[in-house]
Length: 380
Ligand code: CAA
Image (tube, rainbow, N blue to C red; front, side):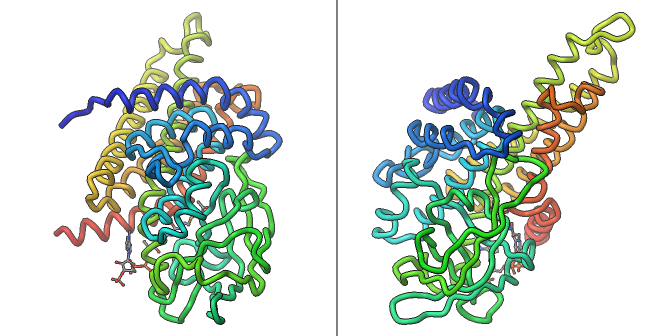
């Protein structure tokens, strides 16, 4: 077993860290306060090759491995969790399924400009009445000549208002799983519109919206994979997405930990820095331990993905551990700051708000436990 990163992986991490600290972190508080999408950062991440990291160069990507992706994404998430989720969705939930299930024509037209960062993609599975039970989705797609006509309302679409196109799931027949198909829906299609834009507790600079489909005309050329393959495409894509959200959580946890650690050395109480108190030291030790464990779980899942091994269980474990770590660490970081932690003058309250969503999207903690349990029971 080798935990040594290659010189290329170290270079990618340094590049992402440098960019994140110089250009993303200084704007994170303002964008969060204004709920403003990080358009400039997303464009620059495209120029740096961070928006299609695992996509081969012939399709506009950087042609890197999943470990490099996780290393870079952690750095962006330390600086700004909202910017990190835009990067994660474009890489994992939009580009990856087109690379794996798309045909040459789709890759040329609908992957290349997204992997190179000229355009931004999204992923639309959830509906107002269908979240964890993804197979119960109701949006319909009826074939009519050389196009499909889509109707329904999708929700909680990350990047929704800013996306040029998205992988969208709709029902082509009644069968719970085999009746779902995947489409690449472009924003200019007739009958496509962005609905309600959500106001959120955290990741406020990330955009989240409903997508409304009213007789939306999608050319048959934009069917991804075959009719009826949609559920499997959705699940296989989310396996990778969960590495992304876990890494976003890891970045939030690390940022909260580093602030709490540094603050504890400067804040004095009872005549000494609070870092001298055992209660604070135990918090810091547990934070460091949980963060390290999350990172190792994420690296394992990413490594397994690169080896083309099944990694659903490992991705679910990594996402579950990292998201619960982000929630716990940011909670304790606010505690270390005391009353100041509750105020907007310090970033720890933002980490506390941002952490929560990582326990919900791309599969709640309850769904990750279900995925893990089903897998371990199969192994018995
Ligand atoms: N890869 C490939 N195929 C898979 C799979 C995977 N990881 N998981 C399941 N499948 C296949 C199964 O093998 C099965 O195929 P067969 O019928 O051929 O045997 C089929 O899919 C059905 O599987 P299940 O019976 O396990 O399906 P289920 O209805 O019990 O659901 C579930 C399983 C894990 C609960 C799933 O519904 C799930 O992951 N739910 C959570 C959905 C989710 O994460 N939503 C978030 C959406 S994205 C978002 O948050 C917004 C955003 O913009 C970021």
